[in-house]
Length: 101
Image (cartoon, rainbow, N blue to C red; front, side, top):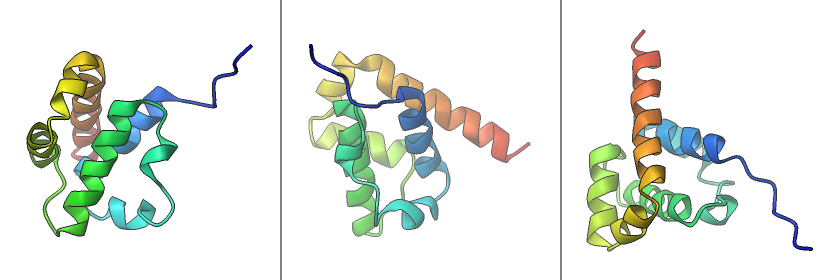
């Protein structure tokens, strides 16, 4: 019987949402957090895009991440897993509301 690796999809979404809200957050995790640390493939792709934007000194926010995902044709994966991208957006909005409270 196959065992699933440890996973927490909500935490993955929260991390991705936080990275899109706090520009300094990526500096804190880039050295030890890798795309392969994410369980869901779409989360891996989103994180890869975040790292690419960071490496190229581009803004990391929902718009720039979504645009880059579209350029790389990763949105096709996201459409298949539409709930993941929508949930990440919702977490982004929740974090944003919390930080501005």
